[in-house]
Length: 244
Image (cartoon, rainbow, N blue to C red; front, side):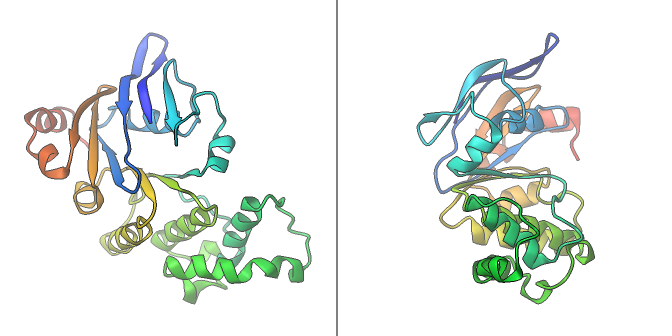
């Protein structure tokens, strides 16, 4: 996916010569202490930053120069650290908007309810898949934080991604919501590829097939959780720099 990827800011390398390969159908976690370059790397992969050097490929295509909109059309879709839903719209309306976008329609809120209702059945399937069926008529602003994240995942799934990039999906959650979203990610991972940045190491241990550890912008270690947890270099990096 990434080869020799670097990002320099006025002489400082936030990401330096990173190689990253994500296997199709796997859950791959990106972890590291604070300041390790995780967010910068994620922003490079999802085209919110332009790399200083290196290449990014997806499904055999060089997407280094593509826009974030282009790669979303290819099936690589990002879910953000901060919940990004329309608070004044219902759960159903939020997912319906994502379906309109996927099918190439504009966000035409003025369309008749009859036209928009053509999306309802499919939207309800995605809503059910994330456990929000009983909240379908609720405004998104009324949902708990964890359920807002579930709604965001439903809208992301409605875009039919082959690869889902999750930016700290458990950020700010209590244990009950963490358990719910972890179970949801495990469920939606079937048949999809997932790359996630996550600080919660118990979540990483539970969900990940493979883990890449960053430190000071470079790959420090890679492997399954057992391998990573026993690495002296990883232990030293976490103890030395701390993480949240």
